[in-house]
Image (tube, rainbow, N blue to C red; front, side, top):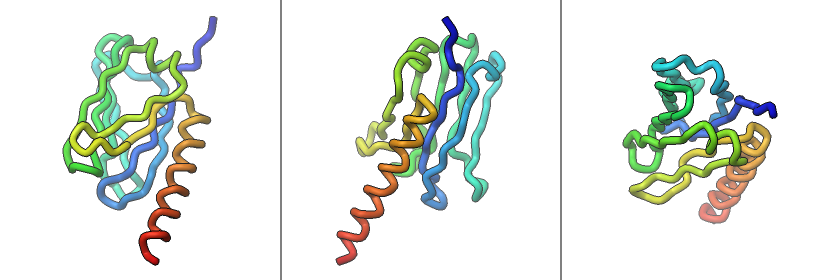
Length: 124
């Protein structure tokens, strides 16, 4: 059975506020190396690391509480689950979506639209 080792992560930049979607190949993560993704504004969004190609550490800079949060996944979780919604442990706000590329994009677009509608309602 073949597994797609490509996932996406949607994270909101704590500097400019843009929701950024980055593609990640778990297969290409070298053992022990730290892979970093940045927003177009230059701010660091998240870092991902694997020491054994089975366990992944995802460090996300949180827009909600301004701290860095660590999320641990094993390869089975990442590849078999459709998508994970990651929340800030302090504020309980959703801060990232990680998983299947298509689903992450769909949810991120819907999340962005819902947020824009909420802002419009609050401005009235």
